[in-house]
Length: 262
Image 1 (cartoon, rainbow, N blue to C red):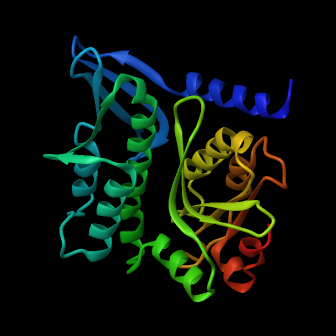
Image 2 (cartoon, rainbow, N blue to C red):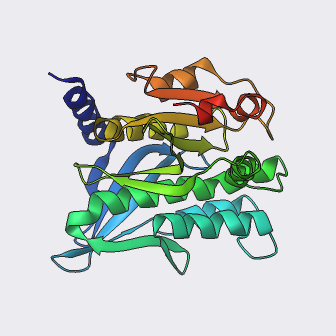
């Protein structure tokens, strides 16, 4: 078995193992994911068939409810929270209807919609984490400002479709003269295993068809902390060192060759 096929098989096994589908009633199917929300419960999505060809995937309003329970209101008075929230909706193609976050799509594109909604929810949940540290700027904005100051050419918000119908989202793509691009995923939470898992799965899904070095950049800048080895291990599990790397943003600020050399 080739390495590419091995990685694909591992990815498929994860998709089957860690997603639990349950019929709620004649209308809705509950989808339990392996990722945690702000209350450390599994993030659940709910799928409703609009007709035989189209489906609506929703969070049933739990994301916004959990933020409000934590005392966080999503309005323009809170500039950082409002920016993170709106950027997540835009980047992942999510609609808000009442308090529900949802995507309507064809049944064929359900895996893509599910993945987009999950990643949007995780990004919006960052608001609760950032508010605890009284952070005035989103981590993605900090990384982007650094790239601009360093005159690094980049493309933000890159989405790569895979053969299994699930897309992978990367926050930045940096080209190189060698032809090996750098695909960067950031995490505002330096030791959150959720994001480490997403990085690992996205690399496994994308690397067979993409000539790239994948870099997981975590926030040890605004939150001074040491990166936990188990989280690094989760991010790099089953990945060759030349394919995937993990770095704290402080280390990149001191030496940006990881982003500039492929």
